[in-house]
Length: 241
Ligand SMILES: Nc1ncnc2c1ncn2[C@@H]1O[C@H](COP(=O)(O)OP(=O)(O)O)[C@@H](O)[C@H]1O
Ligand SMILES: [Mg+2]
Image (cartoon, rainbow, N blue to C red; front, side, top):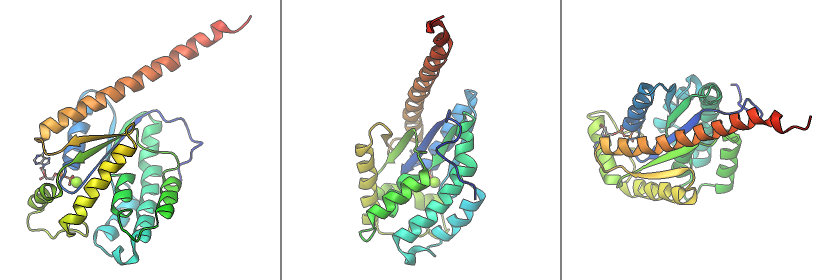
């Protein structure tokens, strides 16, 4: 496994993550935003967790089957982090270095919520693990799709049809509702990075809200770059002769 590093080339792209409970519309919105941005001429990488790279997809199967559940939240988080490190190094960091837009269906907030919500979880350990895994590569923008757990689970069940529920979909509504609150707490604690979107709205209304948010971030990023270019161009002029 290759590792990304904080000393790598400067990051130029935009990294957006989508978070929220089962059936909140993450996959629908990632796909919609990807298509919209591509139509505007942007280069977009749409990916997902757990998974998103060859090494990480192998771990995804272990996690969603429930095989790692008995090991406890820390071991589950370690597995997720192994997958995330590979995903970052082989997919996310290279795309950002090329100046592309990366959309990830779930990322580190899901580990905070799903493993961190366990009352037995060691929060210090999970915090250290998160920092070590991300190595500074935090999302620029996180869209939290908020929906009452029962409504999201009903959508997920409809989508699933006759297939069996996975390890997380099987859990009690109260646990899903606790996770919903945990996502909202993250948004409150990190208002610069996180935006909560009401996911009960029709999909196109959710998409329009997200598109406006992303436009703002792209404008801000362009302004930064214009500023940098301007500074670079004018720097020699103010140097003493
Ligand atoms: N805003 C929405 N209103 C109604 N149904 C939706 C909406 N967004 C998504 N869906 C449907 O709900 C199901 C779950 O959506 P999905 O995008 O797979 O959610 P997630 O990836 O968050 O689990 C899918 O069948 C999808 O078509
Ligand atoms: Mg999904």
